[in-house]
View (cartoon, each protein chain N blue to C red):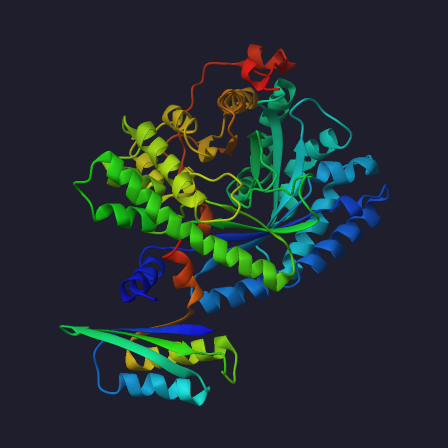
Length: 451
Length: 89
């Protein structure tokens, strides 16, 4: 039955290799909080969040104790606020304040969903929300924001790209005294998913039920440690080792999700099998790629090894849980990964390489610090590029870049904790303005016609 | 319902007695013990039936962790489900 070796392996994974549950995220629908009176609506939002999530943190802590597995974050995601606030016909910043207050009162560290879905154009509530993002992110602590500007089915909203280029820059400028942290809480998506438990891009899609628990697992250190035992394995064997290891990692996520769901009386949604790094030693995705055999992450061969890793993680995880979802793959946030930070600092990895990597793994250009004098149109073009990769490859891509206002190559931004630190990376300074200012919609690709 | 208590560290006199003493205190029944000493390193795994326990899981777990600290060992108390789910399809 219970095997001594297995028990010691589990304990070693947790103690030494940083196996943990990265997040339990409760998704809460706010559709029943809609009211044309903004103050009434915000009260309903506060009441619903605090009612649904009142036991989230304590249940999470109980599970941590019982299974001995750290659950790093308990978080909340809500229905895109642009939808909830549309009837109010004004800036929805008050919603952000209500969300922030609710998050503090239930004890979660981040709340996502200050979001808009504009992949085919702007509707009521969208423009007001988007324009309010910099202010909302600067006056709140825990609120995260996202905007979906494209999809395989609808194409890419180039007007939204241009607008978001401006908004990202403003979010950084307005929080310049907090190391431009505002831009670290804002994600621009293509093909955003409705059940992603990871921040800053989490929101509770309108197709989701009233309340749901989603779990995000992690454990890049565990995968790396497993690979380190087989320095002479061929690449097929490497893929196999990753699959088996991610099976085990994901099983923990499944167990935690099911248990949390029972104890909270909330349906269990999905396990997101993403390998999410932290800046801590031994918790790096880049180091897995280096273990597979690259001198430094960013070298030629990075895209291929990442493709292998991403695929093996998914295959291993699929068997391990009843439902998968979210983003599910490997994350490459630069400032949150010790190996990435090192590679960026020594110049081994560039934005162009990171862009190539986003074609084969789940996230996008994530937590990348760029020079503070980057123009809004350049940001818009970076967004358009990432969106194109996502749109054509039918995958989710995203951009979360942080303009380091007043800083340039050689400087860095440091936020500490899970957000880490990042050196300013080089961008291409040729202007894309004429392209961006044409506006309109990049049409959906041919292969989106699937009926 | 069973818990798995794993004790890892440097071998010393009386570890088994002290750990099972805490289990007895809380009416938890030790059903299986396995241990190995490799050179100086001691690893003991106990399966404990906690269905009749007269306290919360976290109380047992905290006591075990504290005991570990006083003895200079690491003691992990975990519900068996985590091992059952991870290593089995």
